[in-house]
Structure formats: structure tokens, C-alpha cells
Length: 251
Image 1 (tube, rainbow, N blue to C red):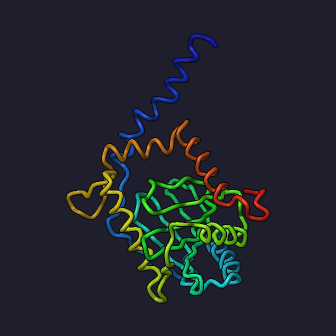
Image 2: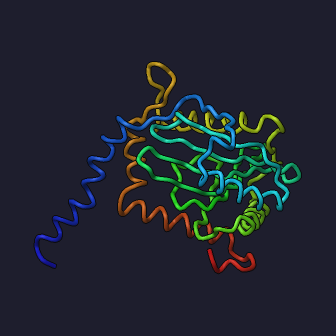
Image 3: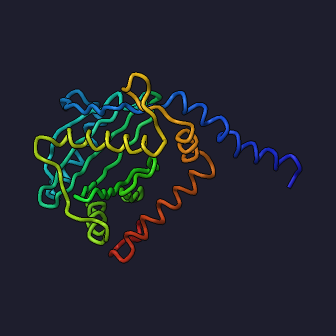
């Protein structure tokens, strides 16, 4: 290896971890209050509406009931989330077809199944290509980005939730209160992260700002090689959870 390569490699790896925390520390925040509001379908872009409606058709066939088109803006800087929200009364679970749009033009589409239990445990199964935020105690998330089929994702969700040994009685979403319950869950998670030392309420008490601990943790999850390691571990955990399930070769 040429002598100059090692310093370049070190700079490539270390620089983002040195600069990144300063950038996110002063630019990132989470609203203390999650505002989720109904939105008319005609107010959605064609691309977003098509994604939600196609997902709706598949979720309808699986026994989910549509709770409406929703929008959450102002929860994080420069990001708006549009989603269709669904509840499954028999299974006491929820689903969403989400589109996250960033002011930079970046766009993320994914589907997610979520089941909350009376003892506080939460099991999420999604096909997002992006890794999640901080880990939440009592919440387990399985990510299957190579599974575009909602039916297949639902089958995986059923498999992993049935075999989870820490769950209790599923709670489900209450008809007419679906959006409020999702907002409350987000607010609860933000408060947990603050309690763990990743965030702190600002002087206005309307936003959570990153602590230095949170800034370093957030940066670590997004830079090389940590992002790749986390992604590998996420996918390994997801495959392990679905091990033994028929036809899982695409995972």
C-alpha cells in the first residue's frame, strides 16, 4: 500500500465523525408535539397518491380498514410525511403506506406493520431501505427492504409477532382515534429518547434538540463504516426472525 493511502483512509473515515456531530447538533430537532392532520386525496401528488392507493388495495385484501390520508409536517426539519393509515381490528395491529419527502427532493416510500402490546412492547415490520433512528427499549424493528410485496411483508409480520416471546395482549388502534394514537406514540418515543440523554427540550419547550451524546450517536448511524455495520446487523436480525418461514429466500 502506498504511504499516502493510509492517511487518506483515516481522513475519509474520521472526518465525518468529527464534523458530522457539529452539523446535526445545530440543525436537527424533533417537535415536542406530533401534529398529524387529514389531507384530501386531491392535495397529494399523483405519485404519492398512486403509492398509497396501490398499497390500500393490497391492505384491503388482507382485512385492514383504511383510516384516511394523513400528513405530518413540521415534526423534523425540512421533512414532510404523507401516509395512508390502516387498522386491523381482528389482529389488533396497524399498517401504513408512507411517503417521506425532504426539501432537497429526496423521497422515501415504504410500508410498515406495527403491533403494540399492553405491556409496552412494540413490534414493527417494514420494507424501508433506510435504517431507523435510535433504538427504543421494548421496541423491536425488523427491516426487509428486498420485500416489495405487501402480502409477503404481512406474512412475515404474522410469523415474527406470533413467535415473539416478550409480547402480551395486542392493543390495536381505536376507530376514530387512529391519527391521535400514532401522534401520541411518536411523542412518547421522543420523551423516552430525551430521558435516555439523546435529546433535551429547548427553552421554548416546543422542540427537542440533540445533546452531544445524541449528535454523536446520530452521526455514527449515518457514516461509513458504522452505517454499513448497522445495516448488516439489521438485515441479519430480520433474517433470523424469519428463519424457518416458508419461501424466505428473497429476504
